[in-house]
Length: 294
Ligand SMILES: Nc1nc2c(ncn2[C@@H]2O[C@H](COP(=O)(O)OP(=O)(O)OP(=O)(O)O)[C@@H](O)[C@H]2O)c(=O)[nH]1
Ligand SMILES: [Mg+2]
Ligand SMILES: [Zn+2]
Image 1 (cartoon, rainbow, N blue to C red):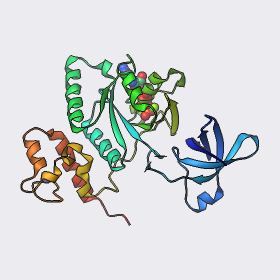
Image 2: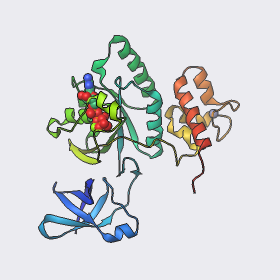
Image 3: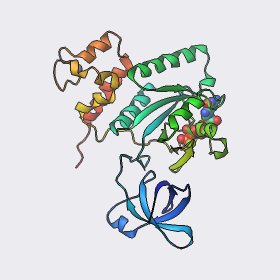
């Protein structure tokens, strides 16, 4: 009996990384399908070796967490990759990712790419955003795969952890990984072809070793709705609001105009950026309008 971690799933095969740093091609047990168990990239598994260095997965160990899209488990942190330009930096999309990641109990790290393409004014604007997100409590890294700026900081964050790179198509996730480990030679594509076909260049989920950590270059998050989040829990996904919510007069305050709301007050005083609060309101409305699932 052996143990390892699934680092790639492709065409019914699972590629399991062992403690000896070997990758064993495995199949799943037939019984998994019957019990609706789908082994995921990131899973810790027990497997048996068959003839010719092929294996057979016997057991999937309990997961710390899992994401559906991209399908991956046991994630320590998500590197949210957003380009400063091409495509334009979008705080509303970033806030959506942050809520999604926070509600899955995964630590986010914000990575803003392509800063080499900015002029002085544009860079100043991006730095103001970076400052807002740092004040909220997130690490923010300004990077360029082109010039190498900030790449060593990204490397520091990856050490010893399982991370997913997430973000829109074309923001430069694969380019960043190539900058971290040039021999990877991951496929990248210029933005016009992204927009033209609206497709991701990276198609499958795979964990890649970088400096003793494992990183998934994902095909991006396709579903960004808040299916499993309750209205009362949304503020816990906005750290700067979560810190204040116990100072609101009412327990369970949704910060939508209730009297003596500490969050609303902080927004009025400019301590919480208006756009963050606007996104909070927008997402809250989406959760309230959500059709019940049975
Ligand atoms: N100037 C500049 N261009 C970059 C940078 N990072 C990525 N690019 C370019 O942006 C385009 C898209 O990069 P990719 O790495 O393929 O983007 P991706 O996020 O992996 O996209 P998907 O795999 O489709 O999700 C490519 O043409 C890259 O050369 C950067 O830091 N600076
Ligand atoms: Mg890619
Ligand atoms: Zn409140």
